[in-house]
Image (cartoon, rainbow, N blue to C red; front, side):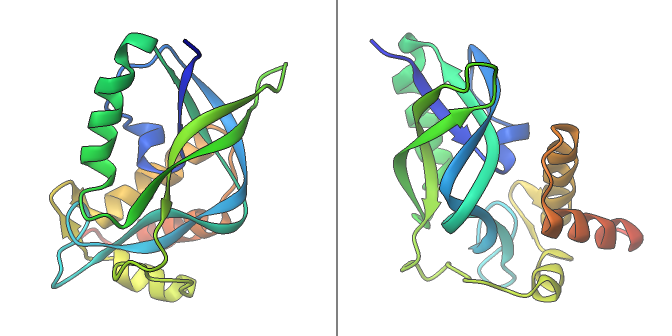
Length: 178
């Protein structure tokens, strides 16, 4: 069997939640990381939704590729589907990604893109609108603020620039936590 890869671009990068053989920075063309999904479960509620990252069409995205052992494929897929498809606002897809290692290999990876027809799709929001929504939202996995700060810190640690996340993190750090 061939290798099984998972591409993470948000919280999967810093909290994958599954066993993997290696993690390699990777690049995906054609989709970009965006705060485009209203979170009703993990980082908000239906009454006070948070905002989480999705892969939306256009641009490109640097993230993390996880190589999963062949024997763990079914277990990891089941875990990812339970985690990522909790409200079906994402669509599970396979994409070509380029591993950022000396050989710069291309591999096929499972990832999750936003379903633009889903009611939780938020579309393109201004950074001020994103800040207002993530500032005080809390869900089953914790505060939306912590999600933003952890993702921004992880990206910075990998040398991945994301101007919106950097701006959000700076603004949230300047405010007292609620």
